[in-house]
Length: 209
Image (cartoon, rainbow, N blue to C red; front, side):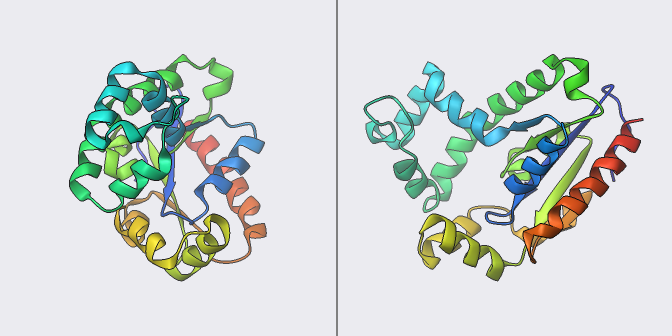
């Protein structure tokens, strides 16, 4: 269950399986004026701008981990981490603790008006990274595997086999759903999402006091 407000504002995570629609949900929260911080974006910036972290990524994945302009070669790194659980664990151990620290510091540094009554943290690996331990509530966006596969086939151009590998590299969607404080079902038309976000926005605002 959600914990009492102990920061002066609520820290709320949004997660879900690949293709469930968590980014769409976060856009709707942002449209309501709520601050949304992306853990995935922070992780990428960290790997591209922090020399020590970049050196660690190169040790794990070779010089091919970065493009000539210094940007992360996502295709190369993803191709390895979705195949190799040990390499995935090593990358997570390198990046996740720093990302969590940066996210928490960024939330506390926000002006009061921007972090209250609550701030959203979008993270695909919210539970896997341990970030959920630092949050007051977690929203899980859930959709069936069939629906998620169809969305990703249309969106990413990946093969069904590649998509299934991505699924297997994350905590099972059903387990995320069970662990969440709130669940947004997103199997149907996305036009139903705004009303669900409005409801949660009202509820979270009340919880924040």
